[in-house]
Length: 317
Image (cartoon, rainbow, N blue to C red; front, top):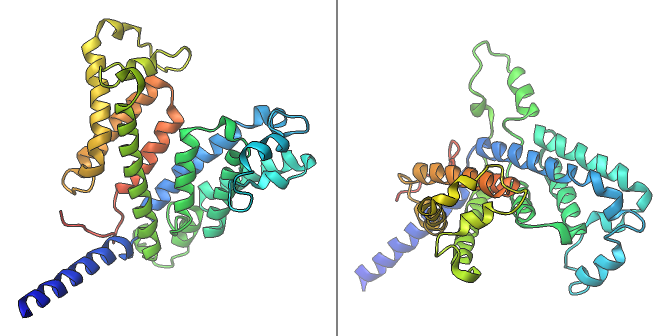
């Protein structure tokens, strides 16, 4: 029994060390900071778009009164269900709260305020989404996920005004690189791993959903064409592609193939640069063709979490 016992002890130690290395290796905040800036800009855009219809949607007698939202979206889970800070906001404070929200998101994007501003940015952004669930879509879901996970790490330690002031305050003549001034934290790694796993599952679910779309449009290679043919949505004139069905089919099949294989290939370190490059090309091309630019940019932001920062776990594959 000794060899068997030794084997399981070794296996247990190897699994434990690998688990701890994957989740808890201290790393810098460089990648998280880049994600913070991207997510902050997307959140600023998302909340800013409410300005044109703020009163029409949320004001007295608006299209989304609390009586409607409460009856349809707050009944099933009265205590743990979807909630918004705007639910209890008096109508007279709607515009002040809106401008305050934009100010919070601006501070967050600049990296001012530490974890407190990250939590505040997630709260105000999700509050707008939750207050108007009838007009939200995939973009809001992805952005909410990013903002929540970014609250875990120290995303304001780099690429921020705070880090810039800290670097300028260094009295040495030959200043070290900015990354060397950042404290390494396991929280940064946990935040990145959660985003990575979540974005992988999202790719897999989108790819699986494409296989089940009615009329088999992705199987037949028409998926991209139908997405690009909607009036007023595409950023490109795709009419010339009507005579190139094989090109459209190749594009559609490449999209589905990428979505289904990315969840496995992205964890192979040597393949990761190719997977990220392919993802950048496919998501940007699909954004221009379909007009879903915010959603595609949010997906690209999630993909950027696979750019490992200094000190992150070096997984052997």
